[in-house]
Structure formats: structure tokens, C-alpha cells
Length: 288
Image (cartoon, rainbow, N blue to C red; front, side):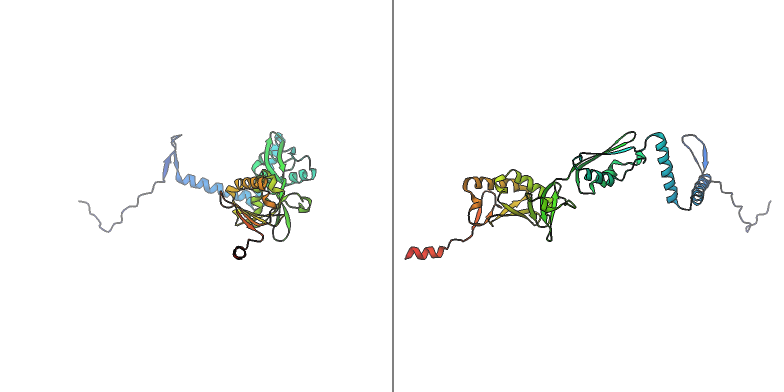
């Protein structure tokens, strides 16, 4: 009968490497092999970075240069950048072309229309910007000049506002004496809607001196006569101007000696005369 030693240590089993089966090829692949391959790939990338100068950004830059050269050889590099819609203003046309930051010879694949459009819109000088790539070698930028619609007093000076409610840089307010004048916080953004509404109310526009934005919800209009027209909130702006036009045509309301015309309540118009009647004096006169 063999002797059994109680203190004899158990033999360690040799650990088998973890494997998995590729469902496509049916081959068994050891995890250690995958890890080794991944480590080697990292090592190659690092070595390549060191060989090219020591930084990944240089690798990216040189790769981009390589792709540009390849695109040029394949005939898909930018040959022409056209700006359409601004032919009447060659200076602005050239400025928009420069803002696009696309030069002849660049890779057409890197001339991203969305990025170019954002650059052009960032000038705040044009509207309705569209950018198209016409393969293999042309970039076309289509834009409309930002037309001035109002002049805004920001508390310090007068500036010109375009049809999207944006201040137009380098535009002189003195060159636009016939535009609607606005003031107050939020006035530039709301000015285009006001100007559009006033376009349908010419009998009102002729007597308007300045419109002041109130709480970014509505307007007060000061007339040339000195009277203030209190308009309702923006959703009722067009209807209120229609009522005021009707009253002006029928009664010449805005030429009366009034201090205030309140249109904020639908169906009613409150008038504030310059010299309110003295009812007490009338009573005394009636008793005498």
C-alpha cells in the first residue's frame, strides 16, 4: 500500500493561454497574440513620430500635405473660388473671398462647404450664404449683400442694422438718413420685423421720429409731433399699426395735440391730450 504524504504540495497546473474563435474564419486566436500586436502597433507609431520629429501633430500635418499633393496630382484640387451675387460691390466680393480662406491648389475634399459658410457669415456683411463644390476643381460662394434696414442708437452712437438684425461693421449711419431709427436693448434683432410691418403702414411711417424697444417685447414710437404711440407686444404689432393707419386716414389722429396714443388693448384706443381738460373749472363755470 503506497504511502501518502499529507504535507506534500499539490502540483501546479500549467495555465493555458486564453483563446477565442473568429466566427468568420473559424481560426483560434490567442489573446496574448492580439495584445502583442497592439503593443507593437503603438511602438511603431511612436517610433514613426520620433523619426518624423517627435510629435503626432507633425505626422498629421505631413499626412495632410501628402493628401493635398495626391489630390493635386489626381486633378481634384481647388483651381477657382467664385463669389456670386456681389458683383455690384467688387470690394465686398474680394473681402468675402478672403474670408472663405480657400486658396487655389488646396485639396477639394478639405474645402468643407459648412465651414466656409460659417467663415463668410462671420463677416456680418452678407445674407443667404450658400457654398457649393463643383467637382473637380471649383468652389462657388453665393451671397446677398446685407441691406441696411434701420439705424440703432446703442446709447453712445448710431450704428446701421441689416435685414437679419445684425449691426453692419464700417457702415456709417449718416449715409442712411431715410432709414427707421430705433433705440433700446434688443432693438437691432427686432428691427427687421418692425420695418416690415411699417412698410404696410406708410401713413404712420411718415410721422415716425424714433421707435424704442421696451422690455424686448414691444415698441414705443415717438412721433414728430412729440406724441408717444404705445404699441402692443410683437404678435399684435401688425394689427395695431393697421388700426393706427385707419384712425390716421379717418381722423388725422397723429396730427392732434396729443401726448400719448395707447394701442396696447385690442378694441380700444386711449388718448392722452397735451393739456387735459379741467373738469373742476367747467363745473364752477356751469354754476356761475
